Amino acid sequence: MEQRRKLKSDEHASHGDLNKLNKEISREIRKDIRKHRNEKIVNTIEDNKSMKIMRRKLTNGKKEIVKLKDKNDSRKYLQGKVQNQGSEDVPEISVSEIYNALKKMKNNKAPGDGGVVTEAIKMGETVLMTNIQRLFNLCLENQNIPTKWNNSIIILLDKKGDIADLENYRPISLLNHLYKLAKLDFYQPKEQAGFRSEFGPMIICSV
Image (tube, rainbow, N blue to C red; front, side):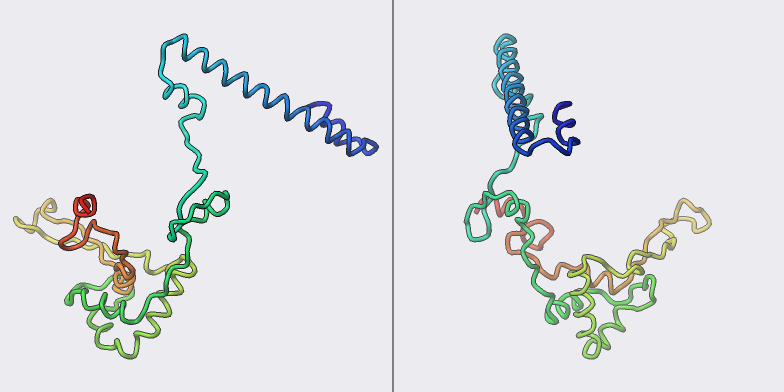
C-alpha cells in the first residue's frame, strides 16, 4: 500500500505500473480473505460448532440481498434495481378518496393548531376539495407536510372523581383537523389485514 501511495504521488510513474500494483494488492487481499475464512472453518470444526454459527461469523450476522421480485413477479438482480424496489410511483390522491375520508371524521371535536374544525371543512367541501387535493398530493410528492401540522394543543380533561384533585385529570393532544384528514389511509392496499374492520392477520395467513 505504501508503494501504491508513492506511485500515485509520482508524476513520472506510468499508468501500467500502477495498474499492475493494484492487481497485486487485490490478489493479496483475496488471499487474506480466503485465509481468514479457512481459519474460521477449521476453528469451527475443531470446536464442534455448527455450520450456521460459522456462516454467522463469516458474514457478521448480515445477509446480503442479491435479488428481489417486482410486482410482475420478475426477479431483479442488479443492485440499483434491488435498492429501488418499493419505490414505484405512488398514485395521486383523488377527490373521491378525500370525500370518503372526510365522511369518516367525527363532528364536535375540538380543533388543534389552526382552529379549523371538521364541520367547516364539510360545509365548504365543494369549494375547498380541489385545493385540499392539491395540498395533499404536494405533501406526497415532496415527502413533507406543513409545519403547523406538527403542532398540537395539549389540554387537561377531568376524569371521574374530585375535580379539585389534579390526579383526576389526563392530558390530551388536539391535532390540526386537516392533518387528521390527511393521515387517514387514502390508499389502503388489499393485502393489508391489520387495523381493518372484519379483517386480521390470521385471515391472510389462512388464504
